[in-house]
Length: 217
Image (cartoon, rainbow, N blue to C red; front, top):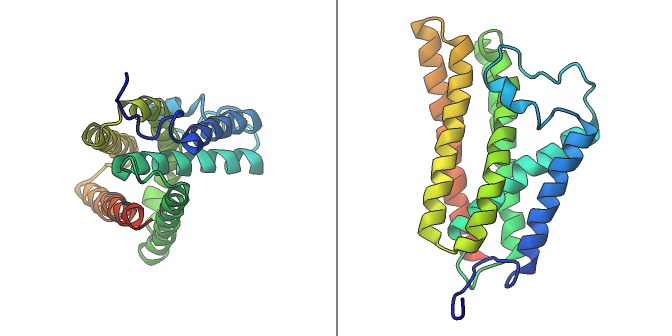
């Protein structure tokens, strides 16, 4: 493989490999402190209850580590989509992590505002709980894909693969919500409006801001 540049590989950018290792440890610690938070989340896609591990007590460390995993994994995916060989900045990665966290917080606040203004919590309250499980599954599926993309070093391929993963994430969440909450035309319209304004739009904004941030840093 002489003459081939491995973008963001362990050989050329050590921080990237260490970051992936830390993310893996976050997933392991999350499962250790909150058994089932990862291993049982696929079940939440098909059962009517929000998660099968709800009987076990929630722990701060479990929540903390799974949150780091949910934020760091998509942040790394965005970095791989827009980094060039001469822009492998650890500072940019942290900036993208901040953007992901900011989008999550804004969506949380908007959800609370919608609940307060339109009393949607009685109709879609459980969907907010399902969302965390879907996000965990998406991050878990994305992680091994990133390990492969780290070695592919093809921006176009990376963007297509990450884009497909994003569509699958939206699709999984839509499917999970539809199984329980589509009972009338008005409920369908509510859900489509919710997905467009609080899922697709924030994701598009996040991608745009990430590209600009990485270009600057």
